[in-house]
Length: 242
Image 1 (cartoon, rainbow, N blue to C red):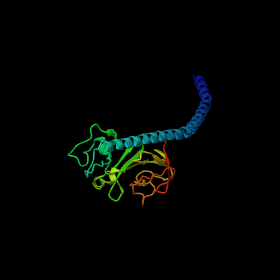
Image 2 (image 1 turned 30 degrees about the horizontal axis):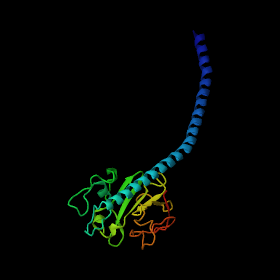
Image 3 (image 1 turned 30 degrees about the vertical axis):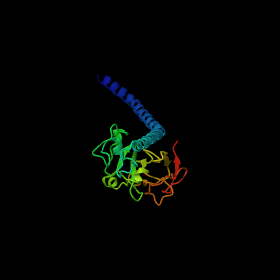
Image 4 (image 1 turned 180 degrees about the horizontal axis):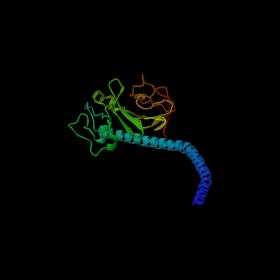
C-alpha cells in the first residue's frame, strides 16, 4: 500500500511540471491574443469613427436642405405677414413643424406641417440636437442681427427684414467624434461648410452670419453675399457643399 502511495506521489510530481508548463503557455497565448485584439481595435475603431462622422455629416446636409425647402414653401404659401404689407415672412422651426401657432394669427397652426415633428425639439436657447450636431435657426431683428428661436428672440423679429433673410447653422457636438465640419445655409438655398473654424459643443459656437461677407459683423444676417470658396465674416474659408 505504501508502494502505491509512493508511486502516486511520483506520478503527481511528474505531472505537475507539465501542467505548469501548459499553464505558462496558455498565459503567453492569452497575452498574444490580447495584443492582437489591441492592434485590430486600433485599426477598426478609427474607421468606425470616420464612418459615423461621414454618416452624421450626410444627415446634417439632408436636414439643412429640408429646412431650406420648408422655408421656401413657408414664404410662398403666405403664412405670416405680421405687418400686413403683403410681403410674407420666413418662419421659425416650430411654425414649420406645426408645433406652435403662426405669428400674427388667431391661434392657427400649420397643418399639414412642412417639417417633421422630430425637428420640433427646440430648447430654451433656440437650438435642437440631431445627428451629433447642434442646429440653430436665426431670423433678423430691426438691426439686421440674427436672433434665435427663443421667447425674447421671436419677440424681436423684424417683419420687414424677415421677409428676405434667415440663416441656419449646424456644428458638431464633439469634434472630431461626431463631426468635423460646420455648415451654413440661408435664404439662397446653397449650403456651405468650413472645417477651419474649430466650432464644437456649446463653448465655441458659430455666429448667425458667420458665412456671409459684406456685413458689418458676424451677427448680421441681412446679406445676399454668401462666402463660397472665400473668407466669411468669421474669418474662416467656406466652401460649397455639392
